[in-house]
Length: 321
Image (cartoon, rainbow, N blue to C red; front, side, top):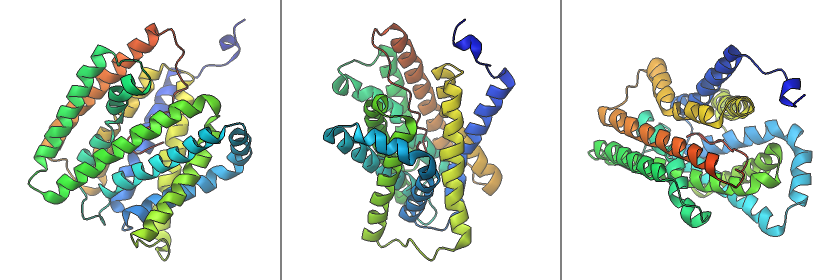
């Protein structure tokens, strides 16, 4: 009897429900950020601090064991991954928080920060010496064209164009975080990896907040409730369910769920706050999502024919793991 036969597989409704809850939880990040009055670095710091504190009772021992087993160079890569995650949140939330002078639309921000899979695919020939599949390059072209459409639509508003740039920088930092995680995850369990990375990111964000004179105290219960919601719903509930679903569904099915995040984020913000997506952002988002779907499909086909085993999946949506 196979190992799979001894485990009870969840039914289709349970899997569909889990993916739906995961999508809503991950997509809610844009809404909580949009209704917060806190500065971007303050939001980022407290989100990572709460996530670290909630994981600490479960992840302290695995993290210590895992870090001891790494070389000094690998521990440096863990720290660098935390820096990349800090920059991912700092740039992306600065493109979205109402307190930021560079806030752009939710549709533009959520879509542009989600182009990181295309960036990873574009860099793969140099970083892993494995060329990206031909279909991935078509997807990369669509994604970058869509990003250009969004930027062109925001060109008349300098602050929105700057916000688009910050969201794209968030995607660049997210790609770096993903690539570092792909190298480290085969050596570390999920908890052993994310706990030191989250803690490092929180320290970096705290230092950045102090450097840019953004307050970390005196924020009130309402803001801390929003920080806690950001830590619990998108990071812990959303990504826990996505990683659980990876154990029962093909990776491409879960990836397709993540690709829907920019759309779901825009819908949630429209329903809750009445903020509609600009026409250029909606058109650009359609191109970006088409491109990302092509990258995902080409990567899946390449993985199926590759003689090398793939690294354990590390999901990263637009809002971060």
